[in-house]
Length: 199
Ligand code: ITT
Ligand code: NA
Image (cartoon, rainbow, N blue to C red):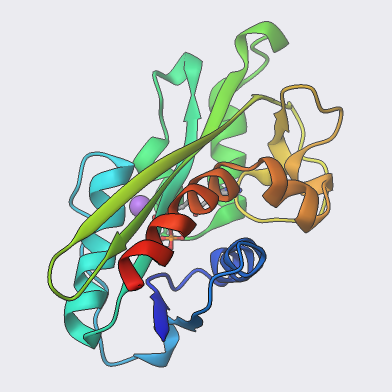
């Protein structure tokens, strides 16, 4: 059986292979890149869950296969949850991770550490071609550094230091990040649902 990963973000694809692989699902994971003819769906939702469901339904309908999608981002306390669902295009150009991170650091300026609380959020959605849907969410709480550290991960990883950690997410190994991350939590919770609905 095949399960389509409804994302074109190769960092997410790599993390999802590791997370869902470790969850012991008896399915073949296929990236959305295997279906280049299917256009990306506009992310018109106002929540991570809505956008994840939009992406999963669009690919499930178009391929006739079950699909999972990830919508995720960084929510900063002092910015009332921004960038949130706009995390991928905070500085204007979709997926410009470095520019997004630099703009966010500039916006926070020298706000002191106790006021630099933030969390990563991830909605993991499953959609079947018949319209059946499930969605679960995960969060990783932390604080934002004033300067980026580390080469691992992607996006805002070099500035998010998880609670209880001395390193940023970009300084963790991939396995360490997946063990605690928003994405790890969401997709580990979705895995038994996938197993049940795919039979
Ligand atoms: P797809 O919609 O194709 O899945 P995308 O990159 O557009 O890919 P999103 O709309 O969900 O995905 O945007 C996610 C953004 O949130 C991403 O660009 C990062 O800036 C940030 N982000 C998400 N997960 C992250 C993580 O684990 N570490 C660091 N930043 C993350
Ligand atoms: Na999004």
